[in-house]
Length: 35
Image 1 (cartoon, rainbow, N blue to C red):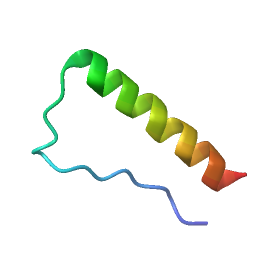
Image 2 (cartoon, rainbow, N blue to C red):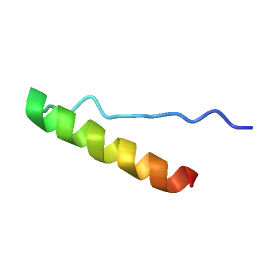
Image 3 (cartoon, helix red, strand yellow):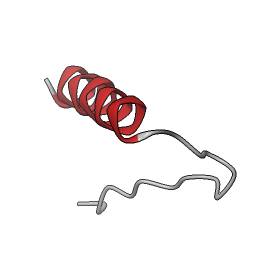
Image 4 (tube, rainbow, N blue to C red):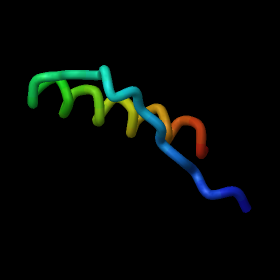
């Protein structure tokens, strides 16, 4: 089985609230893909 990888661009500068929102949204998308 392939190991999932998360790759980001170093230019993705976000505030802490923006980063938390982004991470939460990303997590939801990964759950949708894996189901």
